[in-house]
Amino acid sequence: MSNTVIKLKEKIAYGFGDAASSMYWKIFTAYLAIFYTDVFGIPAAAVGTMFLVTRVWDTANDPIMGIIGDRTNTRWGKFRPYLLWMAVPFAIIGVLLFTTPDLNVNGKIIYAYVTYTLMMMAYTAINVPYASLLGVMTADSDERTSLASYRMVFAFAGSLLVFAIFQPTVDFFHHVLNFSEQTSYQLTMTIIGIIAVGFFLMTFSWTRERIHPPKNQQSSLKEDFKNLLGNVPWFIILGAGVMTLIFNSVRDSVALYYFKYYVIDETALAISSATFTYSTLYLFLGQAANMIGVIMARPVSARIGKKRTFIYAMFIAALLSGIFYFCNRENYFFIYLLQALISFCAGIIFPLMWSMYADAADYSQYKTGRRATGLVFSASSMSQKLGWTLGGSITMWLLALFGFQANVNQTPETIEGIKYMMSFIPGIAALISGAVMIFYKLSDSKMDEIIAELERRRAAERNDITE
Image (cartoon, rainbow, N blue to C red; front, top):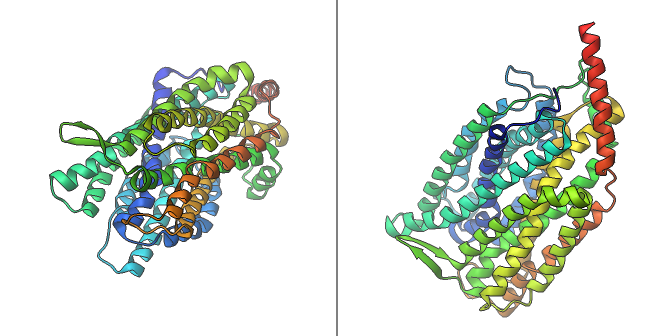
């Protein structure tokens, strides 16, 4: 049955897939920018431009992958096979992304363009099918929210793992084993890649696809795009998602600059040969608070609705982000407190977004009689990468505008700019995200009507087949 209740093992298995993706994603958002400027050795403005230029192809790449997934037919289903086929290439390209070639600055910029483009293509090829899998595992709305919650708990668990081991592992290779800093990043990514491959294979092995397109549905790319362009809830989720990712991306991308050049980062905790700086604890705390937010998403949204939960969380995050500007660099208590509260608000909305994408796929089928789950869910990857790209580009361009120079003491103007990027700028993005969601019309009661009607149609289709 399409509304099958999903067992705990399968929910956990589904979560492992986003643990793998999130490990890489958090490395991109927190460490890639400072790796490019302070280790790899290319200017901040060049990094910002690269993030934006490479997205021209990558933005089109997401719906293309959704279309491919919708038209894939194997004994494993439409979307699961890509978790098997792409896991190892995904890990290998990640290592290449953090490999520093012996080239001049222009050569390094070209290398960065190539490897970054390949990385985003690999991310699309595995993450769009993974996201789409949620829409075909069950038709039950509560089960979808539960699956999305498991997904996000594991996503933030993967992020916690990265923040706990990434920088300490780099430091271990660099300071204890005396590898160069460039080689230390490369070896650390190799370890992360091996873990990610294992997680993806568990998701592939222990999940199942249960929702299928109507038996009489003919493949029509034109009709799929026409239906997508008429899907207003899809556009609203896309817009809110982009702004939410800009909010998160700017805060994550500038955090290490904030601690290195304003707070003056130093060791806060040492366990054996592993050291943890104030910035590492800051990032770790943010992910822990994200996880609590994810856990609270289902009970809170069940009480007040997905839409209200999303709007309230983003408005509160915007307010708290503005307050963050006034934190003194020596007041760790308020820095960490605001990080926890803002991250809680950010965490609570992500399971709702994934569940809403599945609702948008159901809405499209309800209105048109056609189902294009992969194409609808490609918006999730597209908004994620577009939001991160815009956030990363904005961060790099603003750093350059405020006069940032790598590995030197920063001017007061640069420090002031970094503080803006930790507070008011992401706060504006959060405010816009909540405002956009005001126009979302698929209430929980409306989705109950849609799901009931789709189940009636499926039952009628099954009866026609048996007759």
